[in-house]
Amino acid sequence: MKSWRVSSSLAAFSSLLLLQGAAGWDSGAPSPSAGWKPGNMWTLAVESYPRDGVKPDKAAGGAAPVPHYTLHALVTGAHKVGGADCWRVCFVPDKDVPPRLAERWYVSVDRATGWPRNYRKGKGKDLLSIDFAATPPEGPRFFTNAPAGIPIEVFPLVNNGPTGGAEPREALTVRRAVDGKDITLEATLEVAGVEEVRVRQHWVEGEKWWRRYERYVKGSKVLSARLTGVPAAAEGKTAKGDPYYLRRDPKLQVRVDVRGLNPAVPALLDHLHARTGLTLALHPDLEGHRPQLGSVQLAGARAFTVMEMLAEQQMEGGHWDKVADGYQLVGRSKAIRRAPRAAEDKAAEAATHAAMTPWLAGSAAFFGITSLALLGVFLRRRASVKGAP
Image (cartoon, rainbow, N blue to C red; front, side):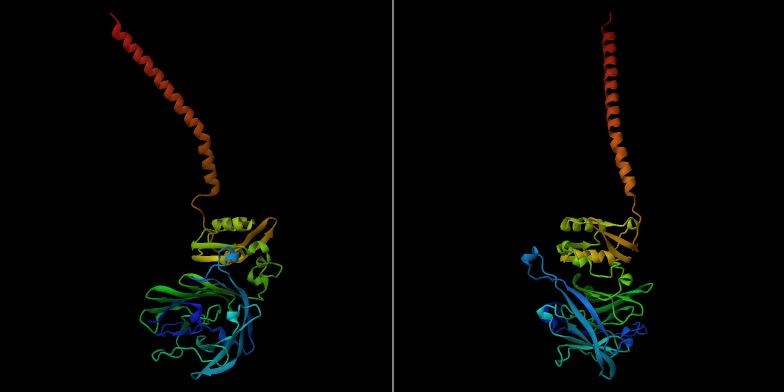
Protein backbone atom coordinates (compact mmCIF):
# COMPACT_ATOMS: atom_id res chain seq x y z
CA MET A 1 0.00 0.00 0.00
CA LYS A 2 1.32 3.42 -0.88
CA SER A 3 2.03 5.98 1.78
CA TRP A 4 -0.72 8.64 1.76
CA ARG A 5 1.03 11.16 3.99
CA VAL A 6 1.18 14.48 2.16
CA SER A 7 4.19 16.62 2.93
CA SER A 8 6.25 19.27 1.21
CA SER A 9 9.29 17.02 1.11
CA LEU A 10 7.39 14.37 -0.83
CA ALA A 11 5.62 16.76 -3.18
CA ALA A 12 8.30 16.49 -5.85
CA PHE A 13 7.78 12.75 -5.93
CA SER A 14 3.98 12.78 -6.03
CA SER A 15 2.34 10.41 -8.46
CA LEU A 16 -0.61 10.15 -10.77
CA LEU A 17 -3.21 7.60 -9.84
CA LEU A 18 -4.44 5.83 -12.97
CA LEU A 19 -7.89 4.59 -12.17
CA GLN A 20 -9.25 1.34 -13.46
CA GLY A 21 -12.80 0.64 -14.45
CA ALA A 22 -13.06 3.42 -17.02
CA ALA A 23 -16.31 1.93 -18.24
CA GLY A 24 -19.17 3.91 -16.77
CA TRP A 25 -17.29 7.19 -16.69
CA ASP A 26 -18.94 10.15 -18.37
CA SER A 27 -16.25 10.21 -21.04
CA GLY A 28 -18.52 12.01 -23.50
CA ALA A 29 -18.60 15.18 -21.38
CA PRO A 30 -16.94 18.15 -23.07
CA SER A 31 -13.34 18.77 -22.16
CA PRO A 32 -12.20 22.43 -21.99
CA SER A 33 -8.77 21.27 -23.15
CA ALA A 34 -10.24 20.50 -26.57
CA GLY A 35 -10.50 24.25 -27.18
CA TRP A 36 -7.05 25.24 -25.94
CA LYS A 37 -4.46 26.77 -28.24
CA PRO A 38 -0.72 27.32 -27.84
CA GLY A 39 -0.18 30.60 -26.06
CA ASN A 40 -3.36 30.46 -23.97
CA MET A 41 -2.50 31.74 -20.51
CA TRP A 42 -4.46 32.18 -17.29
CA THR A 43 -3.16 34.17 -14.31
CA LEU A 44 -3.98 32.68 -10.92
CA ALA A 45 -3.96 34.29 -7.47
CA VAL A 46 -2.99 31.50 -5.07
CA GLU A 47 -3.16 31.00 -1.29
CA SER A 48 -1.28 28.14 0.33
CA TYR A 49 -2.66 27.22 3.77
CA PRO A 50 -0.61 25.61 6.55
CA ARG A 51 -0.74 21.88 7.05
CA ASP A 52 -0.53 19.92 10.26
CA GLY A 53 2.95 20.16 11.71
CA VAL A 54 3.80 23.61 10.35
CA LYS A 55 5.52 25.64 13.04
CA PRO A 56 3.50 28.68 14.18
CA ASP A 57 4.60 32.16 13.23
CA LYS A 58 5.05 34.11 16.48
CA ALA A 59 4.87 37.43 14.65
CA ALA A 60 1.42 36.43 13.37
CA GLY A 61 0.04 35.80 16.84
CA GLY A 62 0.85 32.11 16.88
CA ALA A 63 -0.81 31.31 13.54
CA ALA A 64 1.12 29.79 10.66
CA PRO A 65 1.65 32.12 7.70
CA VAL A 66 -0.58 31.93 4.62
CA PRO A 67 1.50 32.84 1.55
CA HIS A 68 -0.20 34.73 -1.26
CA TYR A 69 1.41 34.58 -4.68
CA THR A 70 0.78 34.53 -8.43
CA LEU A 71 1.12 31.71 -10.95
CA HIS A 72 0.51 31.67 -14.70
CA ALA A 73 -0.91 28.56 -16.39
CA LEU A 74 0.48 28.63 -19.94
CA VAL A 75 -0.24 26.25 -22.83
CA THR A 76 3.24 25.99 -24.31
CA GLY A 77 2.44 23.65 -27.20
CA ALA A 78 1.35 20.18 -28.33
CA HIS A 79 3.16 16.85 -28.17
CA LYS A 80 2.40 13.14 -28.03
CA VAL A 81 2.33 10.88 -24.99
CA GLY A 82 1.91 7.18 -25.71
CA GLY A 83 0.50 8.03 -29.12
CA ALA A 84 -2.11 10.42 -27.71
CA ASP A 85 -2.21 14.09 -28.69
CA CYS A 86 -1.56 16.18 -25.60
CA TRP A 87 -1.16 19.77 -24.55
CA ARG A 88 1.81 20.74 -22.41
CA VAL A 89 0.73 23.16 -19.68
CA CYS A 90 3.39 25.01 -17.71
CA PHE A 91 2.75 26.62 -14.32
CA VAL A 92 5.02 29.66 -14.38
CA PRO A 93 5.81 31.34 -11.02
CA ASP A 94 5.64 35.11 -10.78
CA LYS A 95 8.05 37.30 -8.83
CA ASP A 96 6.01 37.11 -5.63
CA VAL A 97 6.19 33.31 -5.13
CA PRO A 98 7.96 31.83 -2.10
CA PRO A 99 11.47 30.51 -2.88
CA ARG A 100 10.37 26.89 -2.52
CA LEU A 101 7.96 27.37 -5.46
CA ALA A 102 10.34 29.20 -7.78
CA GLU A 103 10.66 26.30 -10.22
CA ARG A 104 8.20 25.61 -13.04
CA TRP A 105 5.91 22.60 -13.18
CA TYR A 106 4.72 20.95 -16.40
CA VAL A 107 1.71 18.68 -16.95
CA SER A 108 0.67 16.88 -20.15
CA VAL A 109 -3.11 16.93 -20.71
CA ASP A 110 -4.86 14.65 -23.18
CA ARG A 111 -6.51 16.91 -25.77
CA ALA A 112 -9.42 14.52 -26.32
CA THR A 113 -10.25 13.33 -22.79
CA GLY A 114 -8.93 16.17 -20.63
CA TRP A 115 -7.17 13.78 -18.24
CA PRO A 116 -3.48 14.34 -17.33
CA ARG A 117 -0.95 11.84 -18.71
CA ASN A 118 2.30 12.76 -16.94
CA TYR A 119 4.05 15.69 -15.29
CA ARG A 120 7.43 16.88 -14.15
CA LYS A 121 9.20 19.55 -12.13
CA GLY A 122 11.51 21.75 -14.16
CA LYS A 123 12.29 21.57 -17.86
CA GLY A 124 14.21 18.53 -19.03
CA LYS A 125 13.82 16.59 -15.79
CA ASP A 126 12.45 13.06 -15.50
CA LEU A 127 8.74 12.57 -16.03
CA LEU A 128 6.73 11.63 -12.97
CA SER A 129 4.06 9.03 -13.66
CA ILE A 130 2.83 5.59 -12.68
CA ASP A 131 1.50 3.24 -15.35
CA PHE A 132 -0.67 0.24 -14.60
CA ALA A 133 -0.98 -2.23 -17.46
CA ALA A 134 -4.58 -3.02 -16.60
CA THR A 135 -5.63 0.59 -16.94
CA PRO A 136 -6.62 1.86 -20.42
CA PRO A 137 -4.47 4.82 -21.50
CA GLU A 138 -7.59 6.96 -21.87
CA GLY A 139 -8.80 6.06 -18.38
CA PRO A 140 -9.29 8.55 -15.55
CA ARG A 141 -6.20 9.77 -13.72
CA PHE A 142 -5.85 11.79 -10.58
CA PHE A 143 -3.02 13.25 -8.51
CA THR A 144 -2.65 11.36 -5.26
CA ASN A 145 0.01 13.71 -3.94
CA ALA A 146 0.04 16.89 -6.01
CA PRO A 147 2.91 19.37 -5.66
CA ALA A 148 2.43 21.53 -2.60
CA GLY A 149 1.35 25.05 -3.53
CA ILE A 150 0.64 24.28 -7.21
CA PRO A 151 -3.01 23.90 -8.40
CA ILE A 152 -1.90 21.38 -11.00
CA GLU A 153 -4.98 19.10 -11.03
CA VAL A 154 -6.61 19.02 -14.45
CA PHE A 155 -9.61 16.86 -15.31
CA PRO A 156 -12.61 17.04 -17.64
CA LEU A 157 -16.15 18.10 -16.77
CA VAL A 158 -17.26 14.58 -15.91
CA ASN A 159 -19.84 13.29 -13.46
CA ASN A 160 -19.27 9.71 -12.36
CA GLY A 161 -17.92 7.35 -9.76
CA PRO A 162 -16.91 5.91 -7.47
CA THR A 163 -14.40 4.03 -9.59
CA GLY A 164 -11.84 1.59 -8.22
CA GLY A 165 -8.16 2.38 -8.50
CA ALA A 166 -4.94 0.48 -8.93
CA GLU A 167 -5.29 -0.93 -5.45
CA PRO A 168 -8.51 -2.54 -4.18
CA ARG A 169 -9.19 0.06 -1.50
CA GLU A 170 -8.77 3.13 -3.73
CA ALA A 171 -11.80 4.91 -5.18
CA LEU A 172 -12.27 8.17 -7.09
CA THR A 173 -15.56 10.02 -7.37
CA VAL A 174 -16.07 13.08 -9.55
CA ARG A 175 -19.32 14.99 -9.19
CA ARG A 176 -20.55 17.76 -11.46
CA ALA A 177 -23.26 20.17 -10.27
CA VAL A 178 -24.78 22.57 -12.80
CA ASP A 179 -26.66 25.74 -11.89
CA GLY A 180 -27.43 27.69 -15.05
CA LYS A 181 -24.02 28.40 -16.56
CA ASP A 182 -22.18 27.76 -13.30
CA ILE A 183 -20.49 24.35 -13.00
CA THR A 184 -18.98 22.94 -9.82
CA LEU A 185 -16.66 19.95 -10.07
CA GLU A 186 -15.56 17.99 -7.02
CA ALA A 187 -13.12 15.09 -7.27
CA THR A 188 -12.70 13.00 -4.11
CA LEU A 189 -10.10 10.29 -3.62
CA GLU A 190 -10.85 7.79 -0.84
CA VAL A 191 -8.70 5.00 0.55
CA ALA A 192 -10.50 2.32 2.52
CA GLY A 193 -13.54 4.57 2.69
CA VAL A 194 -11.62 7.50 4.20
CA GLU A 195 -11.25 10.76 2.29
CA GLU A 196 -7.64 11.50 1.44
CA VAL A 197 -7.78 14.27 -1.17
CA ARG A 198 -10.61 16.45 -2.42
CA VAL A 199 -10.33 19.03 -5.22
CA ARG A 200 -13.14 21.46 -5.98
CA GLN A 201 -13.26 23.64 -9.10
CA HIS A 202 -15.83 26.26 -10.13
CA TRP A 203 -16.30 26.69 -13.87
CA VAL A 204 -18.46 28.81 -16.15
CA GLU A 205 -19.93 27.11 -19.20
CA GLY A 206 -17.93 27.82 -22.35
CA GLU A 207 -14.80 29.05 -20.56
CA LYS A 208 -11.46 27.26 -20.91
CA TRP A 209 -10.20 27.41 -17.31
CA TRP A 210 -11.75 27.28 -13.89
CA ARG A 211 -12.48 30.48 -11.97
CA ARG A 212 -11.99 29.16 -8.44
CA TYR A 213 -10.13 26.17 -7.04
CA GLU A 214 -9.69 24.47 -3.65
CA ARG A 215 -7.65 21.48 -2.49
CA TYR A 216 -8.35 19.62 0.76
CA VAL A 217 -6.13 16.96 2.34
CA LYS A 218 -7.70 14.80 5.04
CA GLY A 219 -10.49 17.33 5.37
CA SER A 220 -8.29 20.43 5.80
CA LYS A 221 -7.96 23.09 3.13
CA VAL A 222 -4.34 23.35 2.01
CA LEU A 223 -4.62 25.36 -1.21
CA SER A 224 -6.98 27.76 -2.96
CA ALA A 225 -6.71 29.80 -6.14
CA ARG A 226 -8.71 32.26 -8.18
CA LEU A 227 -8.60 33.23 -11.82
CA THR A 228 -7.71 36.91 -12.10
CA GLY A 229 -8.88 39.35 -14.72
CA VAL A 230 -12.52 38.23 -14.50
CA PRO A 231 -14.92 41.16 -15.04
CA ALA A 232 -16.39 42.32 -11.74
CA ALA A 233 -19.97 42.04 -12.98
CA ALA A 234 -19.39 38.42 -14.03
CA GLU A 235 -17.68 37.47 -10.80
CA GLY A 236 -20.12 39.40 -8.64
CA LYS A 237 -17.50 41.28 -6.65
CA THR A 238 -17.66 45.06 -6.82
CA ALA A 239 -18.75 47.67 -9.32
CA LYS A 240 -15.31 49.26 -9.12
CA GLY A 241 -13.84 46.33 -10.99
CA ASP A 242 -11.33 45.24 -8.33
CA PRO A 243 -11.93 41.58 -7.40
CA TYR A 244 -9.46 41.89 -4.50
CA TYR A 245 -10.76 45.03 -2.86
CA LEU A 246 -11.25 43.22 0.45
CA ARG A 247 -7.60 42.25 0.51
CA ARG A 248 -6.57 45.88 0.27
CA ASP A 249 -8.29 46.79 3.55
CA PRO A 250 -5.61 46.72 6.30
CA LYS A 251 -8.21 45.82 8.92
CA LEU A 252 -9.02 42.61 7.06
CA GLN A 253 -5.40 41.42 7.16
CA VAL A 254 -5.77 40.12 10.72
CA ARG A 255 -5.72 36.37 11.19
CA VAL A 256 -8.67 34.38 12.47
CA ASP A 257 -9.31 30.76 13.39
CA VAL A 258 -12.48 29.26 11.96
CA ARG A 259 -13.05 25.55 12.42
CA GLY A 260 -16.10 23.38 12.54
CA LEU A 261 -18.85 21.66 10.60
CA ASN A 262 -21.30 24.04 8.91
CA PRO A 263 -20.57 27.05 11.14
CA ALA A 264 -23.45 29.53 11.36
CA VAL A 265 -23.06 32.77 9.43
CA PRO A 266 -24.03 35.03 12.38
CA ALA A 267 -21.38 33.38 14.54
CA LEU A 268 -18.76 33.90 11.82
CA LEU A 269 -19.71 37.57 11.47
CA ASP A 270 -19.48 38.06 15.25
CA HIS A 271 -16.03 36.45 15.28
CA LEU A 272 -14.84 38.65 12.40
CA HIS A 273 -16.22 41.74 14.13
CA ALA A 274 -14.35 40.87 17.32
CA ARG A 275 -11.07 40.46 15.41
CA THR A 276 -11.38 43.40 12.98
CA GLY A 277 -13.52 45.94 14.80
CA LEU A 278 -15.63 46.29 11.65
CA THR A 279 -19.39 45.85 11.52
CA LEU A 280 -20.23 42.98 9.18
CA ALA A 281 -23.87 42.37 8.35
CA LEU A 282 -26.18 40.67 5.88
CA HIS A 283 -28.44 42.66 3.59
CA PRO A 284 -32.09 42.45 4.73
CA ASP A 285 -32.86 40.38 1.61
CA LEU A 286 -30.51 37.71 2.99
CA GLU A 287 -32.49 37.14 6.18
CA GLY A 288 -32.63 33.37 6.58
CA HIS A 289 -29.45 32.81 4.52
CA ARG A 290 -28.08 29.54 5.91
CA PRO A 291 -25.45 28.09 3.55
CA GLN A 292 -24.06 24.61 4.10
CA LEU A 293 -20.35 25.42 4.42
CA GLY A 294 -19.29 21.85 5.12
CA SER A 295 -16.15 21.17 7.11
CA VAL A 296 -14.33 24.49 7.54
CA GLN A 297 -10.72 24.29 8.72
CA LEU A 298 -9.22 27.78 8.43
CA ALA A 299 -6.45 28.09 10.99
CA GLY A 300 -4.64 31.40 10.84
CA ALA A 301 -6.57 32.56 7.77
CA ARG A 302 -6.88 36.24 6.93
CA ALA A 303 -10.25 37.82 7.72
CA PHE A 304 -10.84 38.61 4.06
CA THR A 305 -10.52 34.90 3.21
CA VAL A 306 -13.53 34.08 5.39
CA MET A 307 -15.49 36.98 3.89
CA GLU A 308 -14.71 35.82 0.34
CA MET A 309 -15.83 32.32 1.26
CA LEU A 310 -19.16 33.65 2.54
CA ALA A 311 -19.67 35.69 -0.63
CA GLU A 312 -19.13 32.59 -2.79
CA GLN A 313 -20.89 29.77 -0.99
CA GLN A 314 -24.46 29.28 -2.25
CA MET A 315 -24.66 32.89 -3.40
CA GLU A 316 -25.39 34.37 -6.82
CA GLY A 317 -23.61 37.67 -7.41
CA GLY A 318 -22.44 37.66 -3.80
CA HIS A 319 -20.16 40.53 -2.78
CA TRP A 320 -19.46 42.84 0.12
CA ASP A 321 -20.55 46.47 -0.17
CA LYS A 322 -18.51 49.01 1.80
CA VAL A 323 -20.65 50.85 4.34
CA ALA A 324 -19.83 53.52 6.91
CA ASP A 325 -18.56 51.25 9.69
CA GLY A 326 -17.77 48.04 7.83
CA TYR A 327 -19.22 45.82 5.10
CA GLN A 328 -22.59 44.40 4.11
CA LEU A 329 -23.01 41.13 2.22
CA VAL A 330 -25.39 41.48 -0.73
CA GLY A 331 -26.50 39.17 -3.54
CA ARG A 332 -29.08 36.44 -4.08
CA SER A 333 -29.03 33.53 -1.67
CA LYS A 334 -29.40 29.96 -2.86
CA ALA A 335 -29.78 28.78 0.74
CA ILE A 336 -32.67 30.74 2.21
CA ARG A 337 -34.36 28.71 4.91
CA ARG A 338 -37.20 29.87 7.10
CA ALA A 339 -36.29 29.73 10.76
CA PRO A 340 -38.51 27.59 13.03
CA ARG A 341 -39.70 30.79 14.67
CA ALA A 342 -39.11 34.35 13.57
CA ALA A 343 -36.89 36.52 15.75
CA GLU A 344 -39.76 38.98 16.19
CA ASP A 345 -41.98 36.21 17.58
CA LYS A 346 -39.29 35.23 20.06
CA ALA A 347 -38.84 38.84 21.14
CA ALA A 348 -42.58 39.31 21.50
CA GLU A 349 -42.84 36.11 23.53
CA ALA A 350 -40.01 37.22 25.81
CA ALA A 351 -41.68 40.61 26.29
CA THR A 352 -44.98 38.90 27.09
CA HIS A 353 -43.34 36.69 29.70
CA ALA A 354 -41.62 39.73 31.19
CA ALA A 355 -44.90 41.64 31.36
CA MET A 356 -46.81 38.71 32.83
CA THR A 357 -44.30 37.81 35.51
CA PRO A 358 -45.19 40.65 37.99
CA TRP A 359 -48.91 39.96 37.56
CA LEU A 360 -48.47 36.26 38.15
CA ALA A 361 -46.36 36.92 41.22
CA GLY A 362 -48.89 39.40 42.61
CA SER A 363 -51.79 37.04 41.96
CA ALA A 364 -50.02 34.22 43.74
CA ALA A 365 -49.34 36.41 46.77
CA PHE A 366 -52.97 37.60 46.89
CA PHE A 367 -54.41 34.10 46.75
CA GLY A 368 -51.90 32.90 49.32
CA ILE A 369 -52.78 35.63 51.87
CA THR A 370 -56.53 35.18 51.27
CA SER A 371 -56.25 31.42 51.84
CA LEU A 372 -54.37 31.91 55.11
CA ALA A 373 -56.96 34.42 56.35
CA LEU A 374 -59.87 32.09 55.60
CA LEU A 375 -58.08 29.22 57.32
CA GLY A 376 -57.55 31.39 60.41
CA VAL A 377 -61.25 32.33 60.59
CA PHE A 378 -62.24 28.67 60.23
CA LEU A 379 -59.93 27.55 63.04
CA ARG A 380 -61.12 30.27 65.43
CA ARG A 381 -64.76 29.40 64.85
CA ARG A 382 -64.05 25.73 65.39
CA ALA A 383 -62.24 26.48 68.65
CA SER A 384 -65.11 28.63 69.92
CA VAL A 385 -67.63 25.90 69.15
CA LYS A 386 -65.63 23.32 71.11
CA GLY A 387 -65.39 25.66 74.13
CA ALA A 388 -69.15 26.44 74.36
CA PRO A 389 -71.13 24.95 77.39
